[in-house]
Image (cartoon, rainbow, N blue to C red):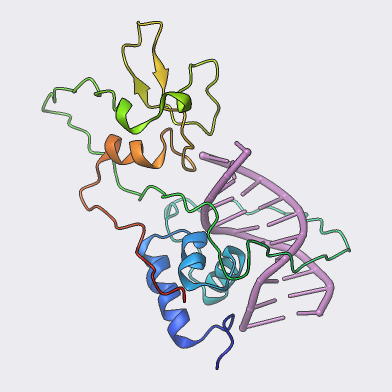
Length: 184
DNA sequence: CCCTGATTCGC
DNA sequence: GCGAATCAGG
C-alpha cells in the first residue's frame, strides 16, 4: 500500500488537472486527501506550475523576502480528527472578465433581496459590517431596516460565495463541491 | 475574522 | 523532493 502522502503519478496528474481547472490549493488538498494546502502549493511550485492566473504582461516584483523563521519546529499538529481535512471549504470565484455593455444599456434589476437565504440573525448593519463579511444589499438602502448579508466573504470578493454566484453569474458554472462519498 | 498563493529552509 | 512555518496580500 502506497503512502497516502506520496506524490504518485496519479496524484500529480490530478493535482495538475485541478490546479489548471482553477481550484485553490486548499480545495485540491482536500480533494486529494491526507495532504495540506501547503504541500499542494509546494508541489505545484516544484512542478513549475506556479503563477496560474497572474498578469502575464506584468512581471510580478519579487524583491527580497526576509522570511524570518524561528528555530523551534513544533510541526505535526494537523488536528481535525484524523483524515478529515474539511475546514474552510469556501467556494472561490473563477477569474472571468466582467462583461461590460458599452453600447447597450442594460436595465439593472434592483437586486431582489434574497432574505430567504440569509437568516435574520446573520444580517448586519453597515456598522457591524466587517471586511470579511458579505456586502450583499438587502432591502431598501433608504430604509432604516437596510441590512447586509454579513456572511463570510471569499477572498477578494465583496460577497459571500452564494451571493457572488448571483452577482456575477458566470457563463460556465464551475462545479465546486463534488460529492465525495469515498471516505470509508 | 477568513482565506489566497509565494517563499524559505529544515528535514 | 517534501512540506511546515512564515510572509504578504485580498
